[in-house]
Amino acid sequence: MIDATVLVIDDDDDILLSARLLLKQHFQQVVTCKSPREINVLLSRNEVDIILLDMNYQKGSSDGREGLYWLEHILSIDKDYVVILMTAYGNVELAVQAIKKGATDFILKPWENEKLFATLSAAAKLRHSNKKVNKLEKLHTSLQTDMARRFEHIVGASEPIQKLQGVLLKVAPTDANILILGENGTGKQVFAYEIHKHSQRKNGVFMHVDLGSLTENLFESELFGYAKGAFTDAKEDKPGRFEMAEGGTIFLDEIGNLSLPLQAKLLSVIQNRTVNRLGESRERKINVRLVTATNMPLSEMVTKGTFRQDLLFRINTVELLLPPLSKRGSDILLLASHFLQTFNNKYHRNIQKFDSKAEALLLRYHWPGNVRELQHVIERAVIMTDGLQITEEDLQLNPQKFGGNAAPTVQEEMALGDMEKLMVQRAIEKHKGNISRAASELGLTRAALYRRIEKFDL
Image 1 (cartoon, rainbow, N blue to C red):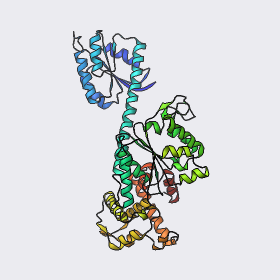
Image 2 (tube, rainbow, N blue to C red; image 1 turned 45 degrees about the vertical axis):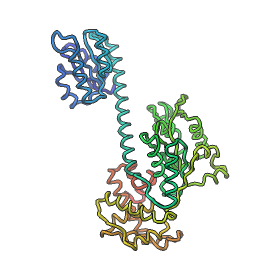
Image 3 (cartoon, one colour; image 1 turned 90 degrees about the vertical axis):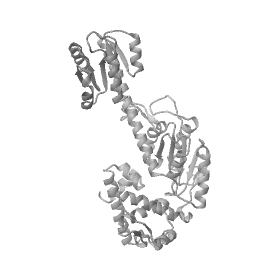
Image 4 (cartoon, rainbow, N blue to C red; image 1 turned 180 degrees about the vertical axis):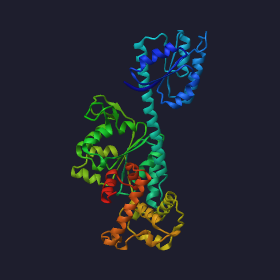
């Protein structure tokens, strides 16, 4: 049984009966009607996949003009409807005209049952394919819009950031492979997206892959895809991340976490510019821009034999080293103001600024978690403050930790734990239980968010 709804429109009762008896054996639902004037109502009430449309309705008419008129009308409602025209009058010119106007096929009455079934089966596959493409296009548009909203630009005017921006603007328009290095939380994903946004591929996909979250078993199926039947749960063909990023940029985060066997597989893809789906011998060409990132010392790892030198040569045509936030001087206040405005909008607050003591504290603190920590500190302050200015107390930063070694007190751990729990709860509620979106907003991986849900018994 084919999962599709067929709408048959013909003014001949015998034709409608024959079509219903034949098609209901093979298709999920068959809807029939005698007049095309009912099309709007029928399409609004049913999720129709295929429309079998007669071309003549008035007695003595054989020129097919009515069918062409209603074909255009149907496609004006949704250009992706699959319409098959039928007529008792064979006319090659009419068939060509119908195809040019958007018909999927053209059949003659009386039809041969096997031929009609074959035509409609092919039409059903086309309709399902169109639906998948539309879904992917909408997903792509949504992802790119969300990404653009999240990473509007790099915030900073310090000398190291200005130098990095200069390099970025030089290399982004090229297709050079770029390796971004830096501590956790320094903004590697922000820079990767900026490279994409200023590249020739800016209208394509920006595909972020967290390699640190992929197990050995999932690595190939996620990155390279798989063929139907490749393993127990492979019920259909599925492209990998490289194929889905076709024409765009693929950002491989935490590349230093890959084992040597996985490094070898990745190197082969980068060198050959092809992927092999699991369970398939066919090589598929890929056309993507490669950007990678890690917080690990890859050169030292090469010396120790834990990272392949040939892979390092492939991924770092250009290397960007992001400075820790503590080395960015007044950028700290620029970023703090940026996050203040962001979270004012998010939580519908109207906090005006930081007072002088809060600014001094922001500049004195050593920021072991870098920009990500600053972002969380400002979000927490916006949530908790009662005034129009954020004070030193609102920031809840422990001066004893400025050296980087002192442990927080029990009271501080409790306060931070309560605040973290509140932020996790709000993110989950905001995204209606969608763990991926909540984790993204909090700057966590899905696994890390699940651990916190378990920790706080949410």
